[in-house]
Amino acid sequence: MSYTAMALVMALVLAAAAAAIQQSKVEVFYVWPAEVDRGLCDAITANVAAYYSRVGDRAAALEFLRRNLEVALEHNPLFRVLGYEVIDMTAASGADCACVNVTVAYDLPWGRYVSRCWLLAVILSRTKVVDPLTGEEYVNLTVACATELGAPVNLRALGGARLAYSCNSTWVLVAPSSASSVILEDWRGVRIELALGGG
Amino acid sequence: MNFTLDACVAALILAVALAYFADSVAGAAWGAREHYDDSLVVLGRLLRHYDLQRAVYSNNSALVEAVIRAAMHPSHEYYLAVVDLESEAVVLECGSSRLSSHLASVTLPGWNGTLRPLVICFRVGGGG
Image (tube, rainbow over all chains, first blue to last red; front, side, top):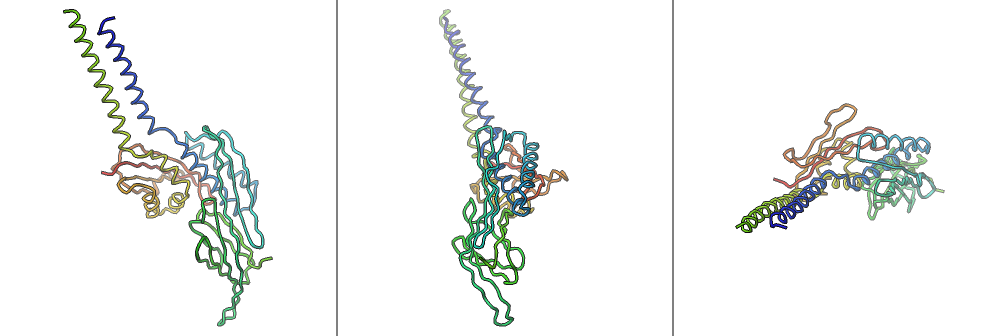
């Protein structure tokens, strides 16, 4: 075998390697990463949890989840959901705690991803305060809140209640005792209802 | 004489092939340095903490800027545009429009218990 023939074979190998390297460089930019799948699934679950916490109807929330997935699949061509399963969809409200939990398992091309969205509030103390000037009675609640990401980024009280952050995921809620309950909403729009009177 | 000519041609072919290979490897390595992270990966990470959705759906460009800056290296630039699918209009635009890296786009179906699809177009790259 002549030197030229050997050089041609080696040149072909080098050209193939160079083409493979260039191709991999292009793929870095256009691959649909699993992180976006997770982000989209979490966004959908949080949207459904916000809807479910307001409506309280499981059947309507399941339909809302289906519509969300339909829109996401239609407008994100590389987002593929092979199937999904609602593992938990509950909203509970007791004398001293309230919780909303939506957990959905999505079957994606790279595996199963379980997306959670929950908000939990526990009443640590409940005291009645009377305004000495007006004589109006208020309920002062110390509430601990948690989500799947830790403490809520932001929390607000709906209605006539006032809410202030204290420390260590604890909020102080002051509401007129004439109200039977107060609604708390986190930064994702997930709502829970706390009873003011207690058990 | 034949052997000499054969060796010269072989050396020439090898030199050209090696130069082409080195150029490809150098180009790939340089491209990887230009973009420290894939725009879609950054976008996915931002979506998982819900702050970006809150900022985008409230049309708050200052909050968008704060959320993205908190997740990026200070020397890098970004560009973000939000398109409302119903009105087909750009509702929010911020960041540097000088970037020429790959523009990633993700459509969110809704936020805060609503169905209102918004397209988030996002790119990151080294600052100029």
